[in-house]
Amino acid sequence: MTRLGSDRRHPVRFKLNGKPVEAEAEPRTLLSDFLRQQIGATGTHVGCEHGVCGACTVIVDGMLTRSCLTLAVQADGCELQTVEGLAPSPDRLGILQQAFRRNHALQCGFCTAGILMSLDHYLRRHPMPSEADIRDLLSGHLCRCTGYTPIVKAALEAAAELATTSEEKSDA
Amino acid sequence: MKPAAFDYVRAESVDEVLEGLLNEGGNARVLAGGQSLMAMLNMRLAKPRLLIDIMRLKELNRIEEQAGMVTIGAGVRQAALLAWPELARTQPLLALALPWVGHVQTRSRGTICGSLAHADPSAEMPLALIALGGEVHLRNARRRRRVAANEFFLGMMATARAEDELIEAVSFPAQGRGKCAFREVARRHGDFAIVACAAVATSKGIRFAVGGVADVPMARDLPRLEGSALDDALNGFAYELDARDDVHATARYRRDLVRIIGRDLVREVLQ
Image (cartoon, rainbow over all chains, first blue to last red; front, side, top):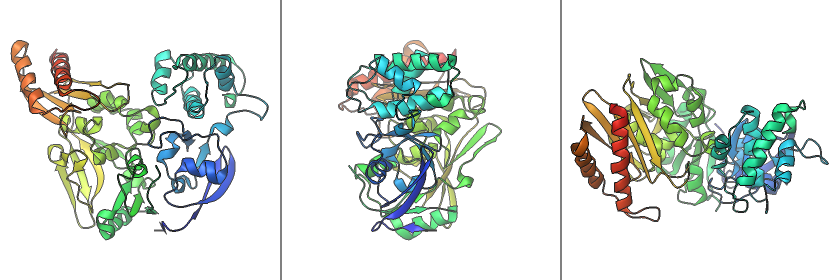
């Protein structure tokens, strides 16, 4: 049994969007803060810090995860995906991201990273979602700009496009 | 809103968990899915000295069925139970109630036993446990014991678990072929329930359970009633729950919901 002491930093290693990363964290450091402050991956946003707003949602070992309700030390040895991994290349947006842009599915953008991660995760597993499915999924996120309607539209458009496209699904 | 400092242990065996709980007294907390505890830590409503992470323990990550009775280990996430192919057949009430627990994004991490340990008065899993009369399996370094649902929840976020005990599992009794029904009113799907109700057919009639009103979920066994006799019984129960006003709803509104949902659920189950 290894007890990680509260009074010092401990090495944390995981794969972030396919690349190994390593930094140090106190046991109490939240994964959201670790990603932003230690790794420098500031695409993940921090809103309420108690699991309600969904802005910090990332994927850990295939599970949608509130990174503010997860400790950095818990992610040690895991595989993480964050919004930085969505675009197929630095100069190109994925299908879901393009649909967000076309439909004005974001305004201030604060909630967007979390919503994109939820939708990306969901659409890979449920390629033919109904509007009700998308709205149920979005109930785990707060957006104060859009009123959600353009987000729902973008998600459905992206789903339809992903279903017909021959492109790799990794472009979601 | 960051947690106060604590030590962290990723347990490699159940014995390690029990040893940690014993040695730290009340200063250790078990970390499972973290969907309630981490929020409490962030808000500093809980300030443990030690967190014991149990999520890598395979022996706690089990769903077992025996003649309809389903035992769910402490490591089983809500999403895993919802995806379990036998759920609707063996535990139809859980199949109805689980989609109301938080959101997709929290059910993916949160555990069934963690929800029971947190004992929020408006939570769905404690309500289902009370409605079905299940048992919580507790274990410390010396012994194991089982506590019946109606003796487990002691008050708002207070349970019969002693400080040195781990909730090892929870069992829900076989539901048989009896019908059941569940309904919840919340401002938004996945938010805390203003009122949540469950009804289960029993040999003598119906058991009707209510969460979100009293400090703990409460159940009442009712004979087969209809018409004004049913309304009177539900009205009496609604007043006994001692509803209070808060920012979300008045006590009167909560009693109204208990009466109206109660009538609908009883009809649905007795049909």
